[in-house]
Image (cartoon, rainbow, N blue to C red; front, side, top):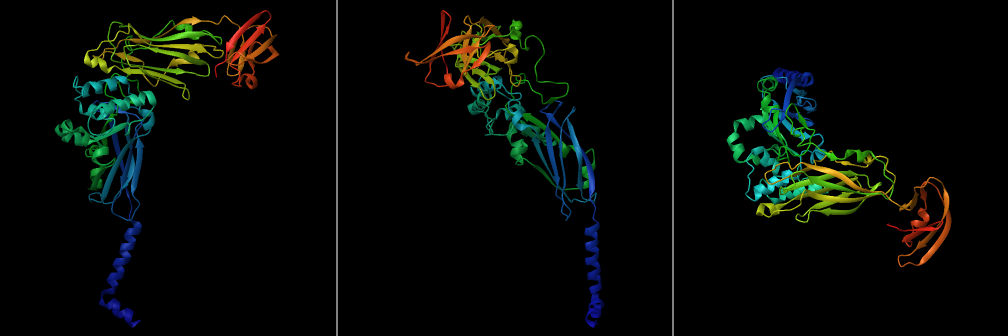
Length: 472
């Protein structure tokens, strides 16, 4: 007891009091909620972008958990806002703020707003025919993120369009609005170094910021206002997009020149029996113009339709790719020879598809349409819209009542009847024959016709014989 008394007498009481007070302060220390508002504007235009998110973190130097917020732009005018915790000391410099911008649907956004027109413009820049000078578009054209524009950037756009291969970077880039305003000359001369991803490795930081500064509507914009650019979107009037928010739109005018037109559209609602053949033409009205770029994106249900043949303009190197997993087809071209004054003579025809109907189609537009995620486009070297369109014609309906597809025999007659089936090898050797009853519509013979030994089937119907080569 004497020892404790001497300790208190020598000033130990003050130590205990201070320790107790400190513990009490830590225990009752409260956080100050700060409301904030920000926005994400597209380049130097006065409209916002949907689905842009901003993760706000405040790691001030106390033992309290950090204040965080994760807010996204949604409806017009596409501002975002929320609340996070700050230090209770309004005028102190206790807050360390970081902001991380990102796209809520980054993968879906890659193709959104990007077409062959963008790649064509990059090739002109690389070939020193037409320079890209806008700093936001310079960053957008740098698809491979090497802080410059080269042929590899255009090739990445072609891979995205034709092979669904994303860029080697995110589909959006952001800039802090106040930094750009304060350093616009430097931004123009070297825009790549001003992106959030390059300048701050994806996060932008501010250290030792007072709560009063964070709370003020006057100073908030320097922390929460951003400008963005869509990677790959260099030519403003290219692909349809749904990320623009506001009165301005990059979707192109809704006039006849930019609208999709399908010639003889009544044919899209007609029913087609198996074995029917027709052609799909990709054409353009300005048939005397030399084509510099084009793309033809289709949705094709390959369970109902088969592409027997693909023909393209012989003066151009056209790439095409059926994608049966996604029921898509794309044909596209960037005619780099045109930059060397080599003309093409396509006479208005760019791509022709010979298509065969595999099974009953009630309405053609249910199994064949334009891919709405991509743009039907064709342009010359001056980026004049050549008014492309799709034309469906040359429909040939089958004259024979029988058609074989996927191990099934289709019979177009109205009444069931018996026939003799004869199965031959490709060399003509008769392997098997049997008598069967065929009903109107499809008749399943998968176990028999599915055997690849049988290459040819002959159907004996009374006094007529129908010979059909089986395609596996």
